Image 1: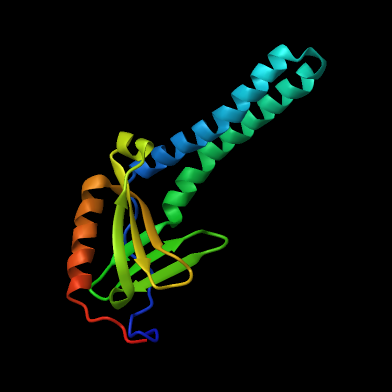
Image 2: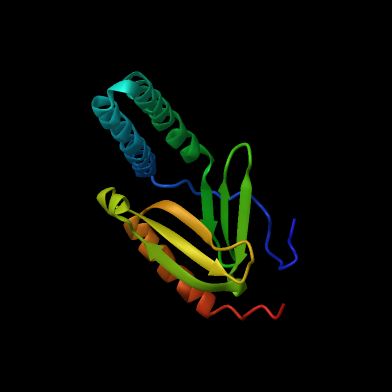
Length: 166
């Protein structure tokens, strides 16, 4: 099946780098640790609310640990990406699946970003900006060398692809 730009609609083939699971887990742990520690410290100093604050800290910690154990592996299973000479394909989500296709003729910029945690795990995010009102197409959790090569490849392909007149 072909879309209006002549791009074949199909599921993308590539998975993210396996280290993305650990990267996402580290993000969950950091996101959970901040409110857990804040609630625990408040509970230690505010005796009238100690029980409630420590219970809340425990609940946040347990919920964070469950999310840390479950979601990253699940996300790894459902995130897919692929780049062809015609388009960039990205699929995310399980219950609410989002399929994004960016035809090469519509690509405006290609960026590679490496935050501190991504650098620690030798990962990177490639962001492909198009004229779409939906926003950029993002591929997070790639090996940093693969991301650099992908950005270079996309730049060369888009340079050699005539623009879309629509």
